Amino acid sequence: MKKLLLLLIIAPMFGFGQALNLPVSNVVVVTGYGQTYTVPQGKVWQLMSSSHYNNNSSQFSQATSSFPVMDDCINFYVPGYNYDTNIPFIFGHSVFPSGTAFQLNDSTCQNSVYTFVEYDLGAQNLASNVPQQTTPTLYPNPTSSLLALNSDKEYDIEVYDMAGNKVMALTGNTIDMSHLSSATYIVKALDKVENEEVNYKVVKN
Image 1 (cartoon, rainbow, N blue to C red):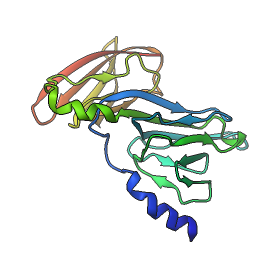
Image 2: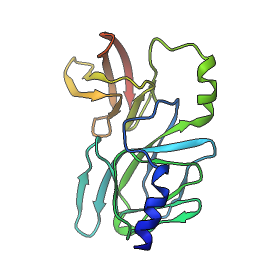
Image 3: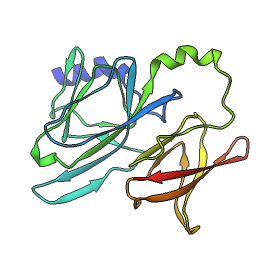
């Protein structure tokens, strides 16, 4: 009961919707038992994808990109609140404030992967003085896994290899390329409101 109450108290810190409309400054992959990952000052991290690997059973399961989960393979500490693996799972694109620290739970989960997009809060203060970008930025490029369009619009996105074969199709403004081979790809994003298409050449490491 105490832990449930604690979860309810800090619930406003977390968001469960789509990607934030803020400048993307980094993509952070939390993996590797024994390491600590901390959200820098002036930044927030939003969970974009999660996967779970259990060494004891040699099983790997990928959570869907639209419904990632903070499960019992990851511990996190929000300044002022301490969480452990006994809390209820947190589903959705949760947002964590600066100072939050993450660690994989134990060696059983050492190959689990949690991907976060890092947003720069300081940049929002300059937003009113910066002209509206007509073409959104696709960041980071090159990438090893997740790409994000710096826009709050929804796009019809298609990814092609250099031979012209379509390898992915989705709707939104983030792309998880972690399952694709290392190569160069063409990303086509159609703005569903303006009916305008933008193309990007992306290197997948």
